[in-house]
Image (cartoon, rainbow, N blue to C red; front, top):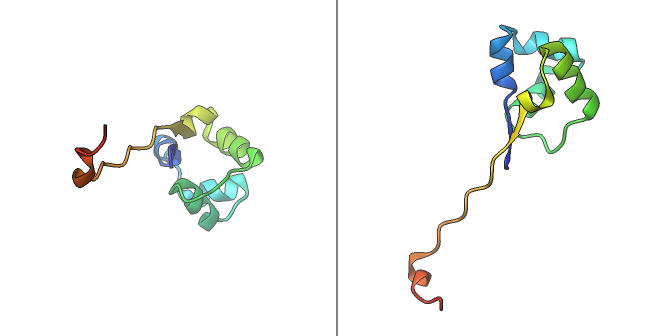
Length: 82
């Protein structure tokens, strides 16, 4: 996924535990782990806003975009293209 979640970075900068952050933003530690580990398919703006408020940061401090890596060409097919 080209969207990278940097919640760990902000948690470390704020010297805050995951359990404390989850409690302060009003979600379960399990749901925060899904978000922080990049397994979430979506994030609510209310959750993003709560994260920014508690961590005293901007959405761009938590989320960034990186292009996906191009798949390597099959070496057997590499020479057959015109």
